[in-house]
Length: 126
Image 1: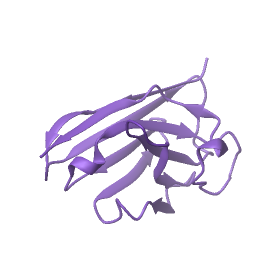
Image 2: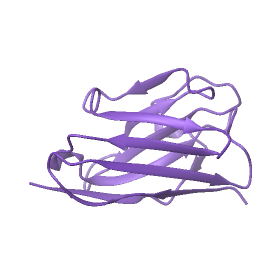
Image 3: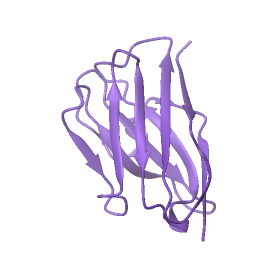
Image 4: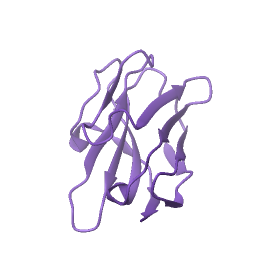
């Protein structure tokens, strides 16, 4: 059974930092692009960051560029999202996702991802 489990969410003050982790089990994703998405109440799920299978290429939403960093450790089958300079607008449930296709480029649309975690809440207070 394939599972993606996010952790590291919580409550933080504006200007603070959090590091999210996404641990995969049931299969390796070392040859798959991975992404982080978020969904705030009443809003659609949106792309936050993505990383190719090698970790050599990363992509970010304009709203988080320069503040968030995505990385991966294929030996641990884990993807990370380092978030800094957080604002209340970053409040959302954050989801980890894995593209089911091998060697695929990073996609920004949620429909392109086959595997999803259950999400972790990030709340930024002003």
